[in-house]
Structures are given as structure tokens and as C-alpha cells.
Length: 283
Image (cartoon, rainbow, N blue to C red; front, side, top):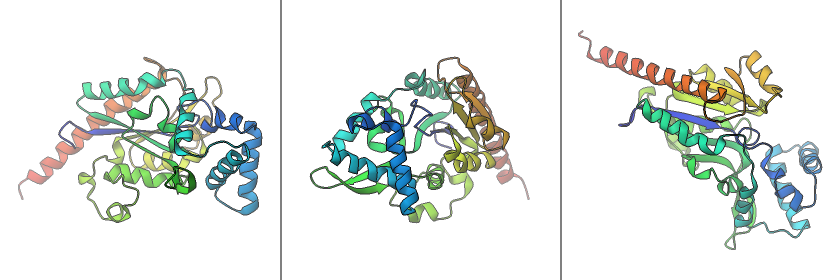
């Protein structure tokens, strides 16, 4: 535990969790003269045809379609796309509210993104500054700032490594040695029991399950009136709760997260108190 109290990690998927659809669909896809259906059909078809990772496939198609449409593939061009993202109700004020609530309980609430979307687009969004770390796909750029290769790829299984990075405080993606070294549970900055994972779909199942079975909380969100996959995630024990993706003040999602944070703060205090008594108990 840090000097400022226990750390509670609020971790989010991005597409269809915070923003209302896949981030490529706001500006990028219309800019390359395609519909969303056409773009995803091409990307998914390429993945099947070449037996390749679906995330790598969409990143490849983004570059190819940009070149074909004579659109820039420079980093700053992708970042600018973030300006056009639209968020679910309450998202833009959510992070300050949750951080302030944690502080009122003597805890530090930190926010993290774990997304298969493009980091550059997230960087250009209005909410980027609220996150302690953003783990997402990213291109490698040459000296002229032109995209030449995938730098980081985040798919539904590799997402789980970032839970351990947050757990151990090892956020440098090039540092695998420290990540894989043994660290006693009580020395880790963010215990799994202090993690809340918020996401929308089946690609988040490994993270949801890992957080949940280790004492944290997973929440499946969905567009108002369309529970879809969220219901099956709760029914199958992958998520603890299913709630509309409405982040408004005093809404159902906020009320639930507040209750979970309260529980985590109390539990963390009791666990640490018990550990101190064990250490000080006479032989």
C-alpha cells in the first residue's frame, strides 16, 4: 500500500465500453471511402485467408486503405482522429468523480486502458489525460513519422499480461525480466483484489475471468436496452455485474462501482491489519 492509502485500479476496454462504437468507424473508415461493414469484412477476411491474428489484419488494412485513398499514415494524422470520438453519457466527467470518491475513502483510484484499438487515436481523445497508462495497439514510425510496422499488438489473450504489469507496477513493455521475477503478493502495488475491470464483450473474457477469480470485480457494460453479450458473461460467471454503459453521476454504474470500491477499501484494510498481527504475534 502506498503512503496515500490502497490503490484501486479501474481498468477499461475502450471500443464499445467508453466510446460508442469501434474507434475506426468515426472518421478513419469514412475518410478512406469505405463503410464499417466493408472495412471489417476485408480485415476479418484477410485474417481468415492468411491465418493471421485479427488485430494485425485490421492494422494492415488501415495502412493499405490509407495509401489507396492517398491519406496520411503519419502518427499525427492518426492522433487527430481521436478528436471525433463520441463517448457514452457521463464518460468525460467519470474519471474525476471516481478519483475524488476514492480519495474520500483514503484510497487512490487509478485509471487504465487495455484495448485492442489504436493507442494513437486514444491519445487524441478528450479523455486521454486521465489514464495512468494506456495499453493498446500502436504503430512503429520511421524518422519522418510515417507508420512502417506494428509496434505493439493487443489481442484478447495478450490483454492479460497488462493485468500483471499493473499488479506488479511494471509498465515498461520492454521489461519482461522484472515482470516475470517473483514478487511477494504483499509487495505488489495493486493486488488483484483491488482491481475493477469494465468491458463490453467476449474478447475481454480472459481479463474478466482473471480479475474475478483473484478477488477483483468484473463489470460487463452494454448500450442502453441492448444487453447482448453482457447477459451471457454474467450467466456464465465471467462477470460479476451487467450494467448499461451510462457513466452519468448517480447512475446505476456509478453506484455499483462506488459500492465495490468501498468493499475493496475495507477488505484491504482488514487483510493488512491481519497480516500485521500475524507478524507481531508471540511465538
